[in-house]
Image (tube, rainbow, N blue to C red):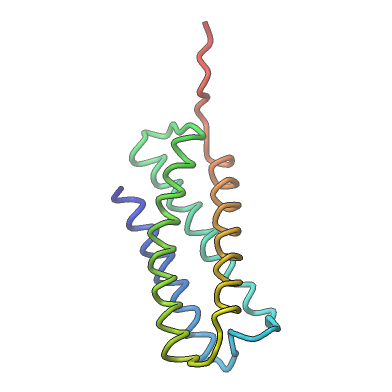
Length: 136
């Protein structure tokens, strides 16, 4: 769980900071249009899950990881990161962009959830190297 907490903490902090950095750079992050630079934020969970899962496989599992082990660990990473980034998003919506942005915020949360699940599956498939089947 230590690896999941550390990786998730990094993902959550970077995702939360991204909102404030975009605001500081002059981009309004809640409207009907998405600026192309906002798509860079997709790389935060993808890279974070991949590196966290790789560290888990190499350090905690001795270099061997099954699909289920990887999937469970990547969901733990995303759970920690999601809690932190949602908290930062709520703070952002309520205090920085204090308008009626709930619809935009919930839409972005769903998008982040979808990206997280897809990146978990992809990272697990790329890093797994142990089969769950035994050969008799």
